[in-house]
Structures are given as structure tokens and as C-alpha cells.
Image 1 (cartoon, rainbow, N blue to C red):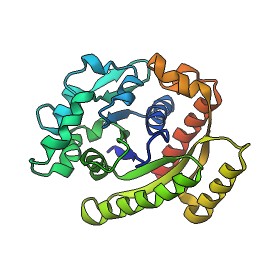
Image 2 (cartoon, rainbow, N blue to C red; image 1 turned 180 degrees about the horizontal axis):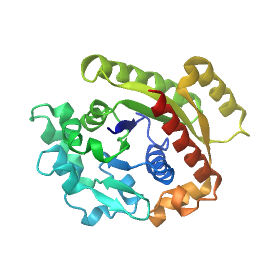
Image 3 (cartoon, rainbow, N blue to C red; image 1 turned 90 degrees about the vertical axis):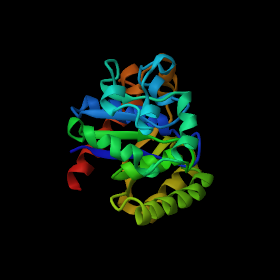
Image 4 (spheres, helix red, strand yellow; image 1 turned 90 degrees about the horizontal axis):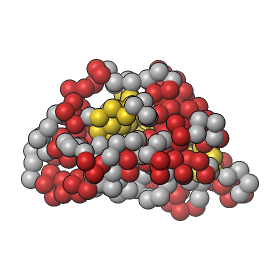
Length: 256
């Protein structure tokens, strides 16, 4: 039985896709069977996993509309070491088309049931908004991983996201919980980031992951080569941190 986790944050540019692809690659490196689901019409997680979104068919779009099964749409990324249920710009149309369908919030959850035995982890990369696509991700997941920068505005957006998770838990998915907050793009030399990090630990306690992902140029360069940073440069500080995070995730799942 796989564990399904959303990588979500309503604020854009906080490293959701970087977290999704590098956590997937890190989990694969520590021996886990991983499926990465790209729910963002930009398809960055698809391209960053070494899968060309321009020639991809079928995609998660067809899966959501019931025109294809997950196993038909999944592609294995040999370079990254995990499977990808990819997305491209067609997915933008799903927002409108899903409105008229039955169980519109649960389309992804229903589709993923067929492959639960095939994977240890399913990671869902969500778009930076509480859209119907993100709602499908939240309804399909056991928990939410929130990547966030240790900055003031990030704290403001975090309260909105936590409230959204509570609402989905109360009304649509009783399994959903906040798994943890991942501090990303962290620079220990900046006093404000240290202060915000301490505030997070005071307020959320063990919901803050022990692993901290440092700001790292090699992680930023990796997508242009169609690879997760963990694969592109395993010796980089950011890559090593994501492998440590993967091990921490495996340990947390064993505690559930």
C-alpha cells in the first residue's frame, strides 16, 4: 500500500517542484518505489524528471477525465530512477472540464487506487493555488509536505494553507494531515531566516522536518539538464540534503 503525499504551498516560487523531483529521486536512491504525479499545467516536474512533456500522451489530463488509466499514462524515467505521471499545457483545460463531472474532487484519488500496490510513495506536485487540480491532489493524499522559505511573507501564507488543509480534512478527506514543513533555500548567514526558522519550530514543533535544504546553485541548474539535482550532482550540498530528507520521510512513514 503506497503512501500518497502532496507537495503544496499556495505561494509561488517556494521550491515545490524542486522538492517534488528531488525527494522522488532521493527516495528512489534509498530503495523506494516512487511515482511522481505532476498536477501543474506548466509541466516543470515532468521535464525536470527527464520526460519530454511536448511529446507526452496520454498525460494526467486524460487520467483525470477518465480517458486513460494511470498505468497507460505512466512513464519511467531511467535517469531519475522513478515513474512519472506527467503533465503539459493541456492540463489547464481540466479546470473547466472537471466542473461538470461527478466526484470532481476525487478523480485523481479514484484513478490512483489501481496502482497503490505498485509503489511505496506517490508524490503529487501541485500548482501554486487552491484550484480544482490542487483539491484533487489534497483529496488523493494521506498528507501534505509544505516547502517554505524562512521569510516573513511565507509565514503569512502558511496560515492560509493550514486552514485549507483543515477544511479539506473536515469536508472531503478525513485521512489528510499536515506531515511537515520543509525549510528550503535556507541561508544560515541571514539573521531573519534563522529567526523565522526558530519561530516555526516553536509554533509547529515536530511538524518541522529536521532536514534543512540549503540554497544551492546546482539544484537550480539541474532542471535545464532535465534531471533532479540529486542525480545531476550527487555531491552538491543541496543534493545530499534531499537524500537525508528522503531517509527522514521513510522514517516518518514507518511511525504512522
